[in-house]
Length: 295
Ligand code: 3HC
Image (cartoon, rainbow, N blue to C red):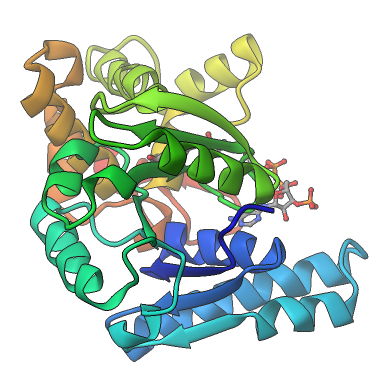
């Protein structure tokens, strides 16, 4: 185990909740901070459900589940992060909000604490520069669903010290994850390759290549992917995909990162995928069907 003992996770949504769960599972005292009690309750009940499912499948003892839950400290108070050795944010994908958060947390935490962002596309360098500890700032980018996906991208920028990078890398390993080292290039490794693929799938559909289910089936059965690109888009969230696309296009100014018109319209219409019940597919019934927006 690394020198890190107490972890603060800021944000308890899809990603933050999963990150908090794996931290507590790995034995870390984990403070989970949200801005709103309803968000916090929803995130904590998601963690509880995941752990209950593991118990019912015989993969976790009830006593282990209770110990994991006991290591989680849900809170609305930023001050509760003061004793954390690592503070990891998974809040909205907005640079100003992240910089503001780290600036506030910097005033509370010890100078040795490491700060990390789970951003999928914003600049780690820019976030680090806005803190009092650029040399102890890294990216720790997890993948959804966090309890299942083994990868963590550990991102270092020009200012990151070797010591902080090694600690963050060892921390990811201590969670049972398989880290890879990345530089601070927008999209890092995975999204740089995955996002243009998903956007191309939308363009292929827009130009009449095949139906949404057939493109999904093609990539699943032809390439062995667990989900086709549209199912994956709905799973990640079309709002998230749209925001990442926007950030990547602004960075690289390359057409392959530009949002297809359909994605932008679905984002604007609130068709954000599973989280809103409708995206490319409609999830009202047990078996998803193609949604009215793209019929
Ligand atoms: N949360 C927690 N656990 C989950 C879960 C969730 N949302 N969904 C599934 N699981 C668990 C199940 O409990 C099950 O656990 P078990 O093996 O211990 O019993 C295991 O995952 C397998 O689940 P299922 O048998 O129900 O379903 P599948 O075999 O179809 O797997 C999947 C589900 C793991 C989600 C699989 O479809 C998959 O790997 N999909 C691709 C996911 C992917 O590509 N993620 C990356 C997205 S990109 C990203 O996150 C980056 C960001 O920046 C956008």
